[in-house]
Structure formats: structure tokens, C-alpha cells
Image (cartoon, rainbow, N blue to C red; front, side, top):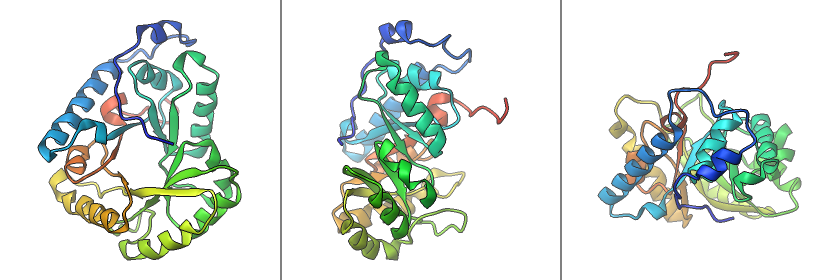
Length: 253
């Protein structure tokens, strides 16, 4: 699978024909937010001497309704990220049932995947959160096609987060590469939450250096608070939710 990195303009025909009761009644303008995020990506690329086409924007639609995905899709967004398996599977089914959106929309699993749910991995465009060799083995056993994956690395060594330690990655990479059906495209990390994005620049630098040493092309790093710094440090995928869709709905709200 090749990640799309282009950003077409909003398609009013899709908006008009999409079989939804209505677009979300919200002050949030997904179209305007996408424009702002894309411009910030372009600005960060310019500072780093890179092309915007080198960065894939993954819109994190976790907890947002399908209508939000449809609105972003009407503005050319094709790559989406989900944290929860069941929610992701539901949205994949909704996309498949909505012909107006096209057949090129991808849902990536970016959240933790438990081994007992590994049978669902093949439904996603990629799994960006492979954090143990045992999970990779469980996924591999249940696949009948090649699946792109990223290895999640806990660069910040945070006890509350999943992922390989930096020093564990080379051995894990060797073991997982021996498994059938899995294609390791790169590395992913979730940086520590800090007030100043500059404080996590060393985290991104560490992951970039490791990816270069291991000759892995993809780096999924950077979220709403720190994606500009991540791009400057070599990220090829940024995972943006709040800056596109606004604050997530409260549970039960």
C-alpha cells in the first residue's frame, strides 16, 4: 500500500450526495481546519528543506462520528487513524457502504492492539502500533495478504505507554521480518505531553536516527501539539485529530 500525500480541494458534489442526515452542527469547520493544518505542514517542510509531498497527513477520527470523516473526505482527506479496533471496524464498514466517498480511503489503526483482537488487523490499511513480537506473531498467523506495519517505540520510556524500548528495536525488527505477511515500513512514537513542543525535539531526533540506521523509510511521529517540530525532525506521517475535528465529544454526550 502506498500512502497518499496529495491534498485535493473540497468536493461539493460529495458533500451534497453523501447519504447522511446532515453535516455536524458545529462551529468547527473541518475544511478550514484542514487548510490550516496543511499550511502548517507546508511551512514546517519549508523550514526543513523538505517537500510537503513527503509528509502524509493522517486525520485521527477517534470518537468523532462518521459524518466528520465524510466531511474531511469531501476536502480530499484520504488517510484516517483510529485508536479503537471496534470503532475502526464500524467506520470501515460505513465507508464501504458510502460509494460517493470513493474506494481509496484508508483507515489505519494507531492505538494499542490486544493480541485477542489480532484477527481484525487485516481489515485496516496498516497497523501503526505493533509493540511486541508476540503481537506481530498473532497478527501474522491471521493474515492472508501483506499488511504494512510500523513498530511502536517508547522513546520517552514512559511507564503509561506501550512500545519497544529503543535498544530493543533492532532485535525485534529481525524477528518480525522473519514472519510471513508483515511488511515493516517504519517506526512510530507518541511523544511525552509537554507544554513546549521544543522539549520533545530530542525524542523525534532519536527515532529519526534509529530509522536511518535501520533503513526504514516511514516515521509516524507528531500530533496536534508537536507535529511541526516532528516534521522538522523528519516525520513522514503526522497524526492530527483535534486541530482538524475540534475537541472530542464527551462520553455519553
